[in-house]
Amino acid sequence: MSDLVAPLQLLRLLAADFPGLPAMNVEVSTLFPKMLELISHDDFGAFEEWRAALGVRPDAVSYAEQSAGRTRVLRAETDYAGVCLRLTAYSGTHRNTEAR
Image (cartoon, rainbow, N blue to C red):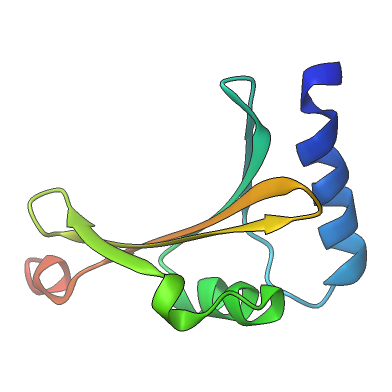
C-alpha cells in the first residue's frame, strides 16, 4: 500500500477541500502509482463541476468517441499536490439514445 500513499492522500485532500462536489468513481492503480482518476458515467455535469473547481482550463479537455460512436468521452489531467489527477466522463451519444 505504501506505493499508493500519494494518490490516496490526494483523495483525502479532495474530500476535505471539495465536500460539496458530486461523488465520482475513484480509480487508484499500482500500474500508475502517482495518479488518481475520478470517473463519471452519464454525467458530464459532474465532470464540469470538478474541472472548474480544480481550475482546469476548458481548452485542456479532450473529447473522443468510442464504441463505434455510441459513447462520448471527456478527459482532462492536472497536477494537484504532486499527483496526476485525471478526470474522465463517459456519456451516451444522441445516436445511442435513438436506438432505444
